[in-house]
Image (cartoon, helix red, strand yellow):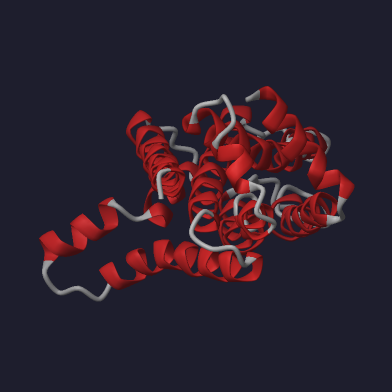
Length: 242
């Protein structure tokens, strides 16, 4: 498992993919931080307030498009190059194999997200109203969201040998998470609308962006990650015995 993780993790820096993802991630997060958080906290204004919600909500949409770049090749490339059979017959469980690939992509995402506490330090120079617990709660929500997108992208990658197809479908699946919330707003039947909101990623992620760290929302995101990883294992298991 460790060998697979290290191989996948290093591969992101052998090719430009890892650098591109980190660069795009930092570009957008930095721009959102300056435009919607730093300015409001007193940089160039007298507001002196700290509002993370806009910055982290916008990151929801950025990850929706960028994380598929990390996951599109994880299993589809193995299948295309016919090296998947070596992995499937290796003396390692499929669960360990799937988790190692998931962890490699997720760690690249975590490296990018590590910049967020630095933003808090910068904010400390412009305002005395910074609440570190609110910032860390927002970061936790972003990490959980990234885990869901990574697990979903890995599952999609297991279904095709074309990387671009995997990326496009992953983006579409991520958009469907958003559409669940938007569709709920137009459902006239209240119980149905409430049920759709209950399974909406954006609805639960928004709770983090306003500083609410609720255990049930953590469990919700963790459950979705588990489901996608489980489905990926089942796909590989079927291919192993095909």
